[in-house]
Length: 183
Picture 1 (cartoon, rainbow, N blue to C red):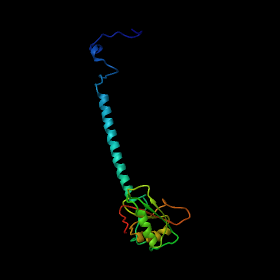
Picture 2 (cartoon, rainbow, N blue to C red):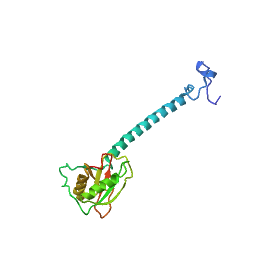
Picture 3 (cartoon, rainbow, N blue to C red):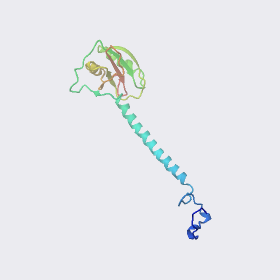
Picture 4 (tube, helix red, strand yellow):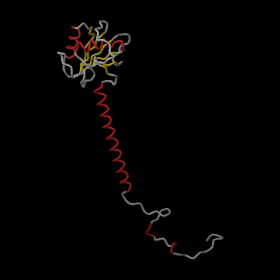
């Protein structure tokens, strides 16, 4: 006994059962499998979040694929659009974004017969485009883009710098699955 401590008589609280295996104050032994249940819930929550993320990204990707590169879309019916014209100085590039062979060459021949200067034809880097579009770089080229779209029977034009060549007026036609060679 320590010095100055008084001796007290033992009572029922001094007797702790040996099979209780107490750790710290008032703690009961941990139940078996509790860590496994926590891990299971965490894995389930992670799976749900990853699944929702994948689903959300596929919806976003589908939306981007149908609208092209996300730019603004205008059509010949737009009230503020300039008149459709043929610009002999505009360089036209025709890209086939379908699996149909020779579609770009057919469109280029149709454009040339209407007075357009077709610089080149090629396959696009993707083949899943559904809607044909004539892209133009600056607002001043919108009338020419509308004229080219009219010549080819394409109902959509879009301003985009994706196909721009600095210092040149360039119109780029991306042919989708809606385009037919007889357009």
